[in-house]
Image 1: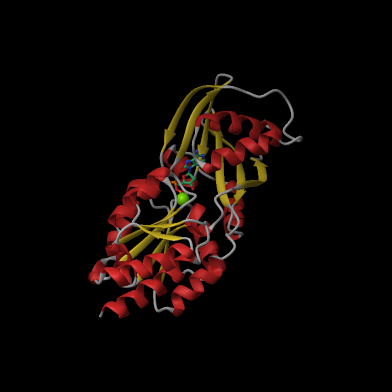
Image 2: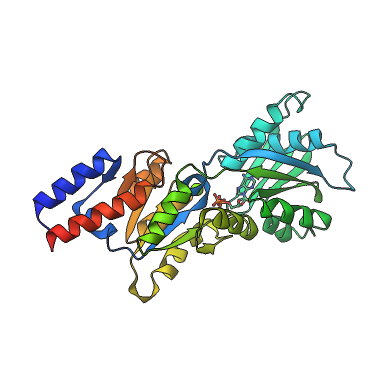
Length: 296
Ligand code: ADP
Ligand code: MG
């Protein structure tokens, strides 16, 4: 690589809001055959909102109570879903004094457990309820309906009984559809890696044109998912924004972080997209390829 072409390439990239950490990253990105993207906060905005509150048929709790208990239980969680649930409980319809949680435990990739007013409240994915030995019953079908609309189903159990279900929507970022279309036109395979439910991930993939979905991946499984995509010696670029994404960013041939993401992600990445716009990825790839052509 000539220092001049690298410098010119890096300068053009900076004008587009793409920061290449090293010359190797600028050269490497153009060689990628697969772009793997994280879902929440990368393809989607990462600002989820509660859209549905459903109390189970047999539950003594009203919908408002359900939301209030879930919000109190989530108050110590750092997960974006927790913030959405807390905000929803602050809305006017979530009336009554704020509840406090006394104990809190996060089960990464599954959900959380907390004590609220002496009740054990467990909030999380379907697989969390399954792990707790709670059959989903009729709420399972309601969750499937939510997931088909690209919403994340969040189950709430109180004192070891399923009490209800929340639906959380996280809209696709402006630019994601076009970015994915362009990447495919550039000859790349676009895969999405997420901890979210299979059906929710499939719905987001259908909406955006992602061709391969790796869903319900546990936090420590994201880097293995990248290894899987690297089979056959294909170079993989991984694009992510979150704490859970750092190992995948490190494992990928080129790690690309959303500049508005967590510090850990930004520090681990080889390339940083200063704006949250995913279109920076195909732009950066085009630039990297042009730089490689100048070198060869
Ligand atoms: P992702 O950010 O890709 O969704 P995570 O591993 O953080 O991946 O979470 C996987 C799933 O576990 C979430 O989609 C959600 O269903 C559940 N989960 C994790 N943390 C929480 C939480 N604090 N509250 C509710 N559900 C949670
Ligand atoms: Mg994320």
